[in-house]
Image (cartoon, rainbow, N blue to C red):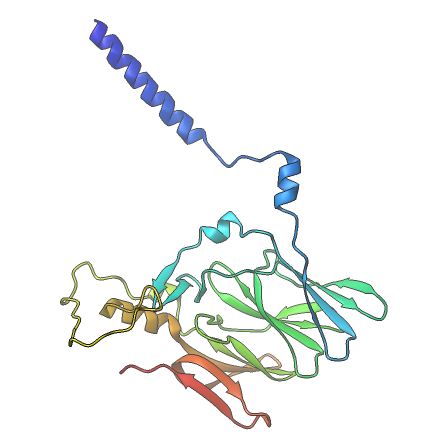
Length: 271
């Protein structure tokens, strides 16, 4: 009988412990501590060349739990989000304010996404517009702010690829060239359950330098994943009309000549 009582007590303790563990959730600290930790940092500022307008870019002190909970692939020295073709570790901006310096008046920017996770901010050539990317759970979008009206508008028709190098560049105030994704993230190569062959490494007896990057490409599957997420198609967006530029490639960077007649691309190709 005593043995049964001991077993019952142990079972009761286990059940109570399990219930207590299930009931645990995120706790809210005292307000004074929360206010100290969550106080917004000083905004980043950017002025146009004539010092007429100032862009104030606000951000949170820390990434949210949702941001930290996003999936992550580690391949070719990169940390990328497999759901949206973006880098997984970024310091996002969550609000923009325009300030007319002469008047000292601030203007709220309308048209911003409700859950703004912005980056890659740049002024247009004549500094009448400002472009930025916004990262969502499924893709990256490209927005343009009209400084005169303080209104943001989404302009891309395809998801933006921000895995490698610059995501876009201005041609003129009406034209942007950006790197687009080629297909949905759900089409990414699946890791094979059974490898087709062994992972082969050669050692020729020569001194090799110490590795400088983590998570280098080590298998055929790594090659497939890197190629899938890093390959992009350049698209020219002129007043909302989009046309493809060149062929899809793994673009590490691209830039325009000063007269805007030529484009230089740096591509990564298989050996």
